[in-house]
Length: 115
Length: 112
Image (cartoon, rainbow over all chains, first blue to last red; front, side):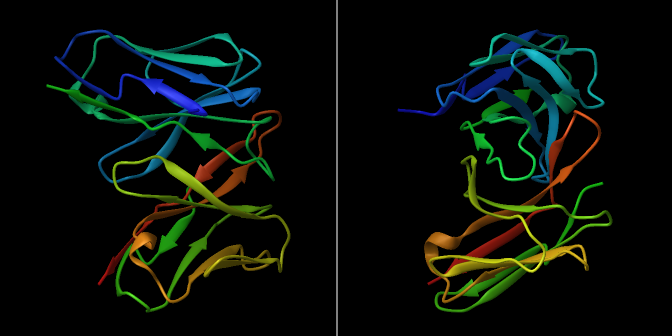
């Protein structure tokens, strides 16, 4: 059983298109995240939701809109895709906010390529 | 601010040892270590919660020097399976919005 699952795994799309990535976790966690990993392998947090409430919104363009219908799901919608959006997007989850002793569990990643 | 890891990359032969360092410009309250194999998700290795704490996991161990604001990951008698990118993570506290900030990463390649 996959703990954190995200779809699609690979996504190739043209500039200007809109796309969504879906994420689900079955670990009973109350906090979910979106991380972006760029070509330099830096892992940067984008958003965090705790019990469906947005608690972290790093300086991310408005074209990115997360949505959490319930605490087990966190989706990411991206409007008007740009070349610079090409990256691997990881969904993750944990109890509370992932600080201190709470382990973060990552999904397998969604490879987004914008052409 | 993002913790800085050193070295950026290291190549080892099987059986050799390596040390990966993680330094922060801010106070460290805890340190998490993750390993990411090529094309896969980061996987949790261990957490150090207290200054002076040391932990071990098979032949991978870590230490946490709270005063120096740094942590080190020790890989002993490396195996091919140790290859990957290692990340440290430190919490950043800001009211209710605590978050885990990952370091710059260290690429470890173990060769036969």
